[in-house]
Image (tube, rainbow, N blue to C red):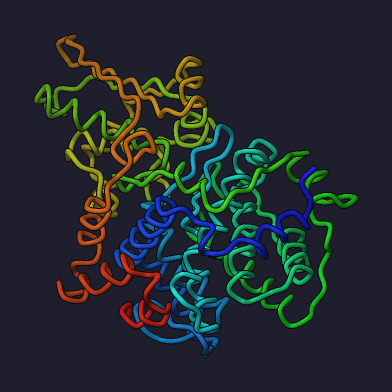
Length: 447
């Protein structure tokens, strides 16, 4: 039986030298990817609303990406909101849960910034958080019980924050107890009508995790039997489970998003763009679009948790397979531009999305649970002609992972409007050589 002490021991005992070279390389990719996405989200209205809220607190101690200072929890809130808001972040692919481990990165950087820690300490803490989140997602999924996946995030970020804040074993148990008893999030965030909170919930979870770790650092005692205790996390939230923690290895099961779209849409979006190009499809001549997909995609973005045909906002659009497939077919791409309010409301996409039909195929569900992300798309034209494509994964899936050069190119696309080439090169090189830098060297480049 997994216990709170087992997690605490893992946090306490894991050091940089325990991480393999391949794992360090993947963690660096995660950090650079997250930084680029965050830069791309600066100026978005919900992110700026968080900034205004954080700046009202007049906190100090950590750098706000984009300028300013805040306390570690408030810096975590804003910087994580920027990483998460665009829905361009990474994802861990488990059969019953799909969290976003990059939700941990900004908060861990904030704690390292506050404590003036080294780059290798940052990599260690990020590896710890990715491992804890991945193991919880794989072995203790909570989605079907009505909990949001950020219920895992508040535990994983607490583990990573505790490492950089220097908590001892008992303080880590308290921090985990505070975070995991007080901050369990409801799945309603991502069902039926979707609000902007969908893109900010993980920032709130990360902030709560960092605050919990800081409380424990300063002597606040929490329940030290979070998982195994009477009426604890296992009984109420997840059911019984076992984890098998290793130093950061779960990062190799994390995907990188190629498109600005929900995780489970990646293969389908890639497929419909390829089909458009291969067959030179004119969207005006399309009669219908049919997608066969796996259970999770149907549930979350295909209509299983509420209609996905009423699309008026970005938060609704990036969780609607009908919208994403229609927009990708018309525009031949899926970037931030496809979520502009005027683009969402335009008649061409609003008309076409209503021709999209999404079905779950049990065979595809089995393939997903075996490690693929399958999608089968059939487009029927007005004259009855049909075009079909099948995808097993996409560029960025763990089976087809992105190289450092591809991650760097994605970073450049997101950061080019804010930073000149020299600054972008500095950020890339600092992440690439992170073990030879302090965290302060990195955050100084993010003003």
